Amino acid sequence: MTDQEYKKRNLYRILRRAAGIFVAACIIVAVGIWNYFVPFRRYLPVYGIVERGEGEVRIHFLDVGQGDCEIVELADGSAIVIDTGNGSWENNNHILQYLKSLHISTLFLVITHADTDHCGGASALLSDWQVEAVFLPVLSSSLDTFENILTLAEGQGAALWKLARYSVIARADAYAACISPYSADETDANDSSTVLYFSYAGVNVLFTGDISEEREKRLLAEQKLGDELGEHLFDSGNYAVRLEETDILKVAHHGSDGSSSAEWLSLLSPKTAVVSCGQDNRYGHPTEGAIARMEAVGADVYRTDELGDIMVTISKNGTYTTEYHYY
Image 1 (cartoon, rainbow, N blue to C red):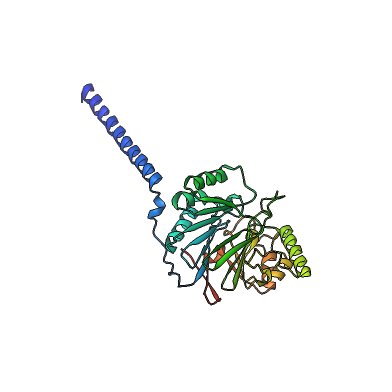
Image 2: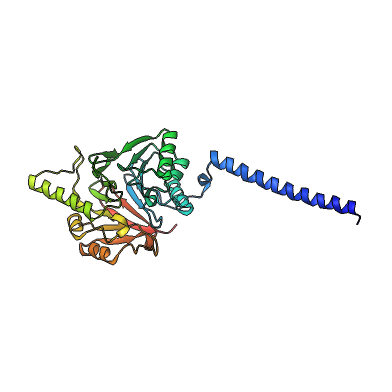
């Protein structure tokens, strides 16, 4: 082979390699542009979740590892998403696939507080789903994750509200009344978590975010004061809050030993307690002490790290059933 032939062949190889790189780059750019305008998660397959019955309300406690995400599926086909997990690729996909499977008509988003394990997936949700309104915590954050949530919500025209005591989300004969935090003097991220009392057909569910025993004591003191005065201090107008009639408890702070005090659980006396936590998490959640206190008041304890996604179905007649699945 002459030098000239060798140079030609070598040039051909270089051009062929460059062409391959160029084609690959074009494909990557095209996929990126396509995903920007039509997010890939819209094409993820749906789960085989049975269709909701007429008049039923379902509460889905999603398995998002060491984080929180609940979907309250209402009787009119709308839904309230409470927290969005930590924002990992796997968890974001799981939340979006789950929502697709429910065929939601209108979506509302509640962020209980600005910790990443509760709001990390909100940006992905807002990027892939039209949200009617976003309910924000009283204590916000300067972290990029939280700022991006606000930008995306404003960009799609979602209404922005802050949830504090006496705020109510009411829809389709169901309501969620906020009993904590207060509108001022909040400094602790966990204790300023949004606490929602949800009620439908006489079944009551308490979502507690990451509140600690200190906030529980404060709420207990107010409950005691109300009892002494003969008043219900947590009521929001016509929307009644009866903590002592709590049926289902979303356990605070993933079953931390610093929450779910014996006195608090004694007041609530839930029949069902749901713990959202990750398998073999480094915090040891839920702790043996917290589990023991729940069981001491007669609660059946369900854990996402052991059971996967947990679904509570409330009938229009005021009964409920609990089941769980891995998807």
